[in-house]
Length: 385
Image (tube, rainbow, N blue to C red; front, side, top):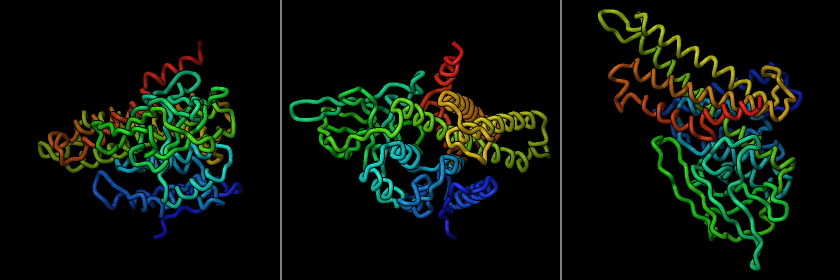
């Protein structure tokens, strides 16, 4: 089976887009479902499947797709609680590279990433916070010394930084203080990367610190558009990608719980026939359906998707609002749904063999990555001040 997605052009109809995404989802679910939870798709498999180059332009050997297609893969990875560097590299790394002004080195990195020959990781914010009205602070800064440019700063809980072959570090420029991206080798002198163990064993996070690292002038990349608006868009992108992951794992937990309630018997009848279990499953279903609507709206807002809900050409503030609503609700709902799934599975749900603990741990980490629900609700409230 050829797992690579079809190329999508500007003239693709909404019906064709919907069909292509359904095909992409089916193939991804089939590939990820071939292994036990947690799934562990290799970097080479994701490259041959076309997942790494979804947003890479066709001229650079990519599919020329949008964030809407990336969101499909992110959701399926969450459903399978898959390990791997997709979030840090294909979602944030490629997304960052596409926001930069055209440069031969950037094009080459995009092409190598799509082929699976490079693993870029975006280092965006200290602590992975949602930030304030302008998208949070810039974690690193450049300084000019007698010996040239130097990079200093620190970011924690950076997805997939320890596995990266290239770091894309968000920093303040020397001249005007505008946000720029510094492309550097993780092994460069003055760069420290320390893995940060977390309860969720399916994610790999790291602390990245620069201690006067020497930076070549040509490795500093400017954004193609307004720098601060672009940074906010990248953070919104990160938040929605995590929300997609949480939506996928919520749906997996709902399906598993309903399936278990149908076959598990107590007092001579399936436990799913009891009113209390029915109500609990109904509550889970409502949470999942609301989360899906909010996530779909956020993905559409970011991708400008004509096949979605029709919300295109939104203002940056509207896009951020959609992203925060999706992140706050979907990630909070995922923790509740996974916890309820563990409870409704009874004693087996608390065992290591059930695997439910993997979903609950991932849901708990997703809730904190790129802004906790409370931080995103504060961000939403700022619009009404």
